[in-house]
Amino acid sequence: MSTPRRNKRQAVALRYDSEKDMAPRVVAKGRGYIAQKIIQAAQAHGIPLVADAQMTNLLEEIDLDAQIPPSFYLAVAEILAFVYRINAQSDDPR
Image 1 (cartoon, helix red, strand yellow):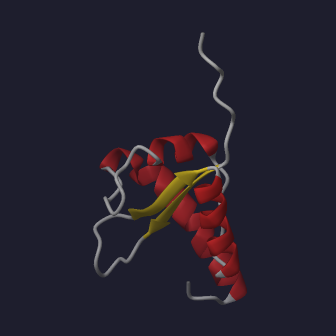
Image 2 (cartoon, rainbow, N blue to C red):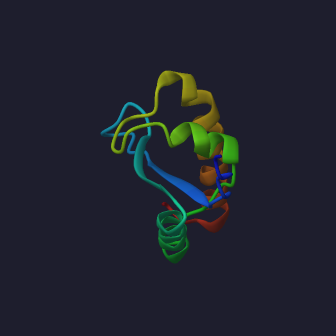
């Protein structure tokens, strides 16, 4: 008999450097305690968070330091646009 998997918090961190990378990279990912630490680090550095469980599940399948595949470009572009809008409103160049 299998035990149902508890819903654990999960997190994936992306980094995009348009001068170095062709696409955003997965730089951190984890569930439970590791996810909590990723989220805390982002909050401590004023990095915007986007809660999207479906996207997180998909991004979790990508290897660390790997660029996202082209099939993810549109969805991640929407997330980046959201972050850029937030940064523009706060005049923060992150």
